[in-house]
Length: 474
Image (cartoon, rainbow, N blue to C red; front, top):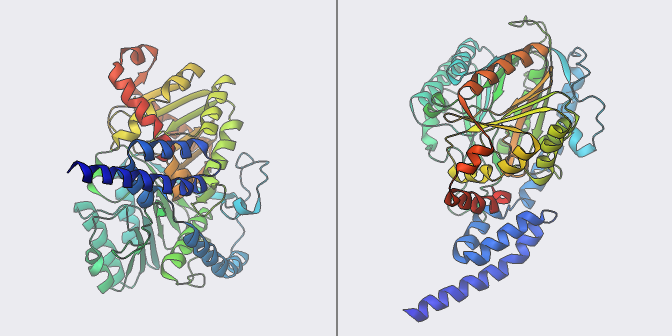
């Protein structure tokens, strides 16, 4: 028995050594991530080797090439459509002002458009009610992308709503992520398909898949109704989100075409169907919005196929330009070194920097890693608030006139491994409303200070430090 164990141990060490070149190549330019993986490989070789080849090794080269090829194939049709669309109103100067971007990022960041109407949806229940109302009024098409769709009361209710609209002749197209919705049977959407709708998994993982693409996931949350109304934010479809604090936004106007293009791009990649000529663009023109058209929008679509992640790059740039206020809500706080320095330097400049995270996280390991960043942030003057409950909202409030809402968390998965969509909204009205919401959540939060940090046991600090070693991997 001892000989067998020694042989297994030796084999795992050899496998770890063979894995090292792959780690160095895949994490080129990210020494901290490479060192974290190498530490794990030789500290826990059997577990870490398996984890690397299943989760850490991105296996993105072929899929990246396929994704870029798909974008090149659909690009001419999309540009032709854009040339025929009504011209949006001028955007606010504050929105991506004086930003010069390389060609790779220009494709991922939509030009700011003015003349939009937008409403914040500050609770999951309100968001679901708005979705239900909009779906019930659809007459032309419904386009949806969701990372998680659960087989529960909420998931079945929205499936049935979509099914009913499909029976009425509305063209329903739905993408759900195969990993995020791993617990969902494919037959779940059969009623929708039988009614004439489409429901397709994004990059499904089959038993015989040679290289499981756990990291090439679609984390976006989009609902587009008739090309007139668009919803985005951080809310998935499931009962548990009714118990969490989350938020979304409803947009009407030219900004809807930005969400529409993201859907068309993802649909073509997943289903090989070009929808550019399906009459879905520009339908907002001539439609009277729900409220004042006083909001400028710019949506950012990022993904692992980009050399420089668009959301991370623009987020870093915006943080460095912040002048007065930077209030952040994120369920997962695992910033890289550059973003951590940007947050600290904002506090040095006198910016009121506040970061709200959940006190009760659905991913305990990430929460432990997040807390290891607290001392450096607190020392710089950043205020850290732990919301009593599960906070799933993903938003950033900049100064008095700008905010960012979307699907991206402040962690490695969102900045490097997932497809994400987040929208800048330039509006003093929405900024004030979001500030009020943040303040109400702050009243239900515990502010972390040096005293609380000192009260934590050495065991807790040790666990946090161990989790922090894994932060480049999270």
